[in-house]
Length: 451
Image (cartoon, rainbow, N blue to C red; front, side):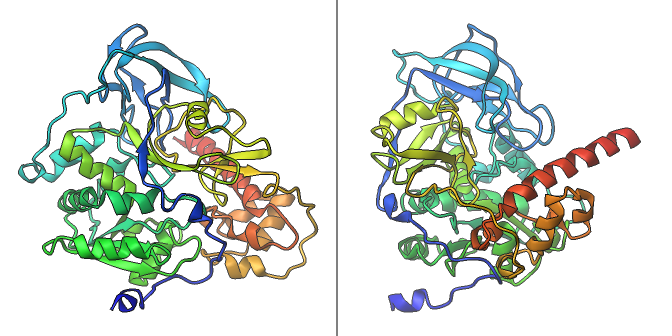
C-alpha cells in the first residue's frame, strides 16, 4: 500500500540531478539555539525598502516587540528576537558583503525571554483584510530564501484571482533539510497556516508539493491532514530546481507562467512551507517572525544541526554552538551549493531569508580552469526556463548586456543548472547575475529620468 502512495511523481521539463547530500542533517530533530549576548538586525533583510527604526539607543525592548516598521508597501516590519537593550543603530556587516544600517540589541541575561504579549488570535472571527494586516505587522517574508514580503504576495491585484494556493515543500537545494524537519515536527501549524491563507486569498484549493526523497513527510502529511481541509499532498520527482515556483506550477498544474509574468497570472500564489508554518504559529501565539529554522551542515562543521535560531544571531555564535569549523574549511555559504551566497566574514547575522549555512572543505572547493565554450548545448538541455545559456554567456562575456534582453535574460531564475553541467567550467550563472543587476540599474535610471 505504501508503494502506491508514491507511484505518481510529477515534474517539469529539463533540470538536473545533483546528489542531495541531505544525510548530514535529515534525521536530526530541530533544536533551539541558546540565547547569546548580542543580536544584529539589519534593516534591509528582505526584498524592497529597508525597515524604518522605531526604537533608539538605550531603549529597553521585549522579545517580539516591534523595533522597525515597514517603510513602504514592499517592505517588512522587524521585531526584537530577545528582551534586552538597544545598544546601537548603526551600519554593520551584511551577508550580501556590504555595510547596512542595523539595530543592535544586547540581551538581558536576567530575563526569562518570554514572548511579548503572547496570546492566541481567533483568525476565524477576522476578515481577510484584518488577517492580512496582522501578517504585515508580523514582519513575514518568504523563508525559502528570496525573503519577499508575504503581505505583498497576498495582496491580489484587482482583476486577478488566486484560485490555487501552493505550499512549496520541494526543498530541492542539496544539503538543506529545514523544510523536511518542519513538515515532520510542525505539521499542525502548516495546516492552520493553510486555513488562514485560504481565507485571505479566497482560494478554492491548496497543494503541498514535496519531492519524493522525503517520503516520510509525504506519508505523515497525508495521514494527519484534517479531512475538511481542501488540500492535496503532491509527490514530485526529485530534480533541481523543482523548488522554483514556476517549476512547481508546471509540475502540478501543467501551466506555464508567461515570460515576464507572475504566478498570479495563472491563478496561483506560492509560499514556502516554513512561511506557512510560521503564519500558523503567529495565530497560535501572536509570535511575529523573530526566529527561523536553519540547517547547519556540510563536511566542514563538527556538529551539523537543524537549529531554531533567533533572527540576528551572529554566524560566529552559531558555529561555536555547533562545535566549531574544521581546519580545512574553504568556503561558507548562506544557503545551499547551487544558489547560496559565499560569506567573507563570520560576524554577519542570520537573517529572515537564511535557510541554511553550508561549510565546504578543500575537498569540495576545487579551483577549475575555464575553457572556451564547445557548443555542446548541455546548458540548453538543463535550463528549466528554456533559455540559451551558451548564447547568453557569450554576450555577457563581451558585455553586450542590452542584447541579452532580446534573448530573455530577465527570465533567468539564477538556479545555476547551466554552470553545473558546463564541461568548460564557464561561470554562466555568475555572469548572468552581474548582467541582470546592471540591466536593472540601467532601467531604474531610465525610469527616474522619464518620471
